[in-house]
Structures are given as structure tokens and as C-alpha cells.
Image 1 (tube, rainbow, N blue to C red):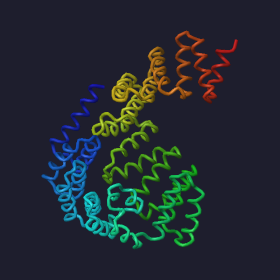
Image 2 (image 1 turned 60 degrees about the vertical axis):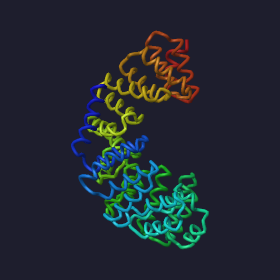
Image 3 (image 1 turned 120 degrees about the vertical axis):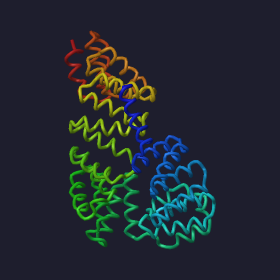
Image 4 (image 1 turned 120 degrees about the horizontal axis):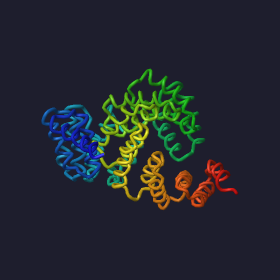
Length: 400
């Protein structure tokens, strides 16, 4: 594990000092800001901007300045982004002026955003806490008297809201109305796919999205839904291809690497999976999901000792998480290190006693160490929690 971490750190450091790509810089800066290290994010973005002026770098640095509370520098960077790519910084400027309480300036930039290709959805704007300071001002109320969004856009937002609230029938009713007005519109088809996704019909979603993407192959929103549907349909090879398309677009979301790595793990491509995970961990070295997936991939590759090291590293950062103990316990179980497995299952169950699978596996480990009474106790606990697999063990080992 130490060797792996050193390699990860070396990769990260080498990238910074040798002039890493703008995309790598964005991912690293976003990770630093997410960890509260805004000044470090500013530092690496400033270094990158010294080599090449790009609007997306200015936008990211503006966000870091905003989080630091340096509004003047943030405003300057948003204006620089605008000068390179028209209107790319207007939404950021609208947010800053709203935070400063300047409703007139804020709404001027918000209007420019809504009239541009960078326009934000109604949901994004209305849920943005930056505007809470001015939302009771007369300028804000007057601004929203104008219909900034079409009936189609409003309908799609309502469908997304109803689905997020578990109200699928209400979403279907809105979809029915939209379908009658906007026949074969790709956004309406997308909304229908969202409803099918919520209904557990990934195959239908895949058919719909394949048709829509043939006309709009680079649409991030559509590609994300397709990849999720492919994963849910166990088409992990197809999902990895779709996630690759998103990654190749340089969308600054390192989480896409983990999603693709999970697909690679399920297709048995452990080398590719680890390459994605190590890159992700170069940005988020203490991330629970990343370390857990790394251990699982190593286990799948038969490299159990390295898997244990990743799981142990995860426990160092997340000592109160039952899942971290469970990961390591499962690895010990596969290695037939029975007592170590029992210890970790016990720790996991102390934190979450409702995990039926943990009780079952702990019982199997107990049985293997010659403790049938303890094993039967665990099997019965597993059965009480609804694990039908425990019945077989109880009938075989616990009924005399």
C-alpha cells in the first residue's frame, strides 16, 4: 500500500511541476477546494493560467476566490472568462453581486446568462442559495414576472421534481400533456426515459437514449442517463464505453473515473479499473468510495494482501464506518483468515447490527474456527433479519 500511495503522490506531484493539462489542473483544483484548501487551488490555477489563458481555468479560480471571500478577484476572473468566451462568467457574476446585495447588477448578469448558451435551468437558479439575499427585493420579483422558461422547460422541471419526490404518477401526467404538444421532442423523450428509469425499466431507457444520442451524441445529461441505465441492466461493458465518452469530453468530474472503474471491475478488467482508481485517488487520497473500490478490485485480481492494505487505509480515515470494517472482513474471509474476519465482522456489527450478510459471514467464520454454538447464534441473527441463505446453515449445523 505504501508503495502504491507513493506512486500516486509521485504522479500528482510530477503533474503539477511538469505542466499538467488544463483538465488535470481543473480536477486537482476542484479536489483542493472541496477539501477547503482554496489557496492551494488558486495557486495551481494561477500557475496554469501563466502558461495558457483559458476561460474554464478563470472560472474555476473565480470559484476558489469566491469560497475564500475575495469577491474582487473573483469578479475579475469571471470578467476574464467572459472576455475569452462570451457569457461564460455571467452566472458567476450574478451570484457574487447577489451575495453582495446588489440586485440590479446581479439580475443584469443573470439575464445575460439566461439568454446565452450557458443558461441555467429554473431549478438550478431557484435552489441556488446565493440568491437568497435578494429574493425578497422588488427587483427580483419584477424579474420573474417575465417568462424566462418555456412551457416545455417548466414541464420537464416538474417531472424531475415529482420523480425526486417519488410521485411517478404525477410525473406521468405531466409527460402525457407534454407529449401531446411536443411530439417526438428529444427533451420529452428524455423525460419519458427518466420516468422509465424510476420504474426500473433500464432496457426501455437504453432504447430511448440511443435514439436521442444519435442526433446529439455529446450531450452530457443524456450520456449520464444512458450509462446509468446500462449499468442497471448489467451491460457494464457498454456503460464503460459511455463513461469513456464523458471522460473524453474532459468534464471536470473525477467521480466519472470511479464509475468507469466499477464497470471495469465487473467486466474483469482489473488493470483498467486500477488505473482509473489510482488517478481518482491522486485527487482524493482519503476518499472512502475510492479506497473501498481499490480494495475490491485488488481482491478480484487475487491480490489479497494489497486489498487488505487499501481497506486498512480506509479504516484509518473512516474508523467509525461499518462498511469499511465489512470490506476488510470480507477480504479476510476470502483469505480464510477466520479470526481476523470475525474481529472485523464484530466491529462492523457493533456499528450496524442490522446487516444480515455480515451476521451470516461471521457465522461461517465462527464455524471454521470450531465454534458451532457461536456460529448458530450468528446464523439465527441473520435469518431474523431476513437472510434466507441462513436457513441452509441452520438446518445443516444447528438442528440436532
